[in-house]
Length: 108
Image (cartoon, rainbow, N blue to C red; front, side):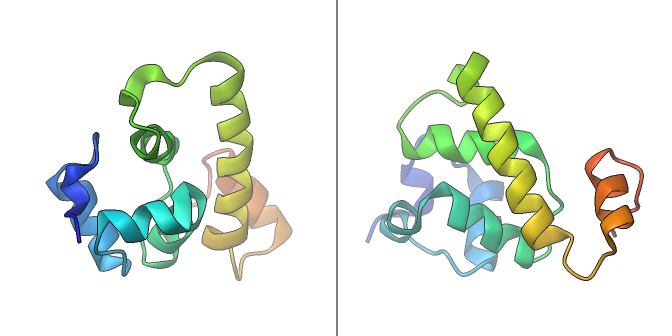
């Protein structure tokens, strides 16, 4: 089983977050994919942020983290917003979810 850090763009801190969310090997991360992995991170208490989400996508494709641009980045942003709303905003009212999406609600 390969270490998470064997994947391009996954450093010690990101690997620790993934491990804390129950993803412990590179094979497991590849098997569940970026969306499911990011959902697990949110459910484990990681504060949502778009950059780590798309870095994870680029990592699993073996691409540089900053290779995500244009329409691909826009599509990933839409998916990120869906994941965030479905995982991070559970238990919040529709208004609180909207305020969270625009950065107004405290996400502690």
